[in-house]
Image (cartoon, rainbow, N blue to C red):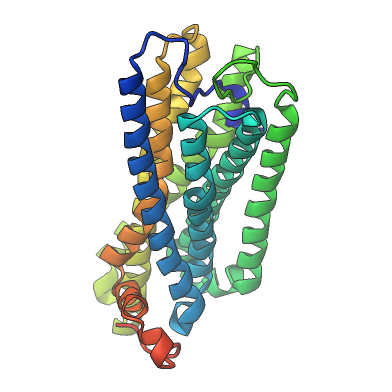
Length: 322
């Protein structure tokens, strides 16, 4: 079940409203500038992550493959969802109903894919920190491949279900609607299943990891140096990915909370508030590359080689990234 099935989202300004034309035009220009810049940043940042993981063999690890899947979902948000939303906002189209369906379906698919990928990343981190001796057995390339396939399959099914549930004949007005169910209870349940439950699950897993990491830190002096070094690397990776999850939750929680209270409050939450929180959620897709660059020296090295064009002049795929 998908939470976007259950809410009405409006992205076109009301032509019949008493809003001065100059104001509407100004808002449209500002949104185009903001949305266009956001789309470029998402595209550029996530391309760096994707190329780095695919090209440099040092980054060919199960955890990084999950990060690669997450980067692909973020990249598609920048290429497809954000531009579609700008188009739907600034101009009414005769095929608006179709565009709304396509944009909504892609939004559902990619948001679900990100959530499921983050859940699998938390499982990967659990085994890496809490059960390090079983990590290489439990989490290998084949298992990660199954995780990635499962995440995209679940997300695609949700996107298809969303499109099928959306009415074939849209509202004959100047607004872009996403499907709204009549049952208020079903709205809250759908949001909890699609977002609330995964968020709670990931939080509990990382809380468990934190408790285990603290115990490891207290006993680290009794470990061999090599074991301590490996443990330190894993804890740093876990901390970074926990930040990725935390920023994702902070970006999307306001929107999903509004969706939960919107029907319960008889739709008193202003539309522009829902719009603002939705754009905040989409903005999350540009954050991860900056997090990787800030915390991972090897990603910084990889990004530098890509930006300077070194990967096109030399065979540096086997280079040791510092």
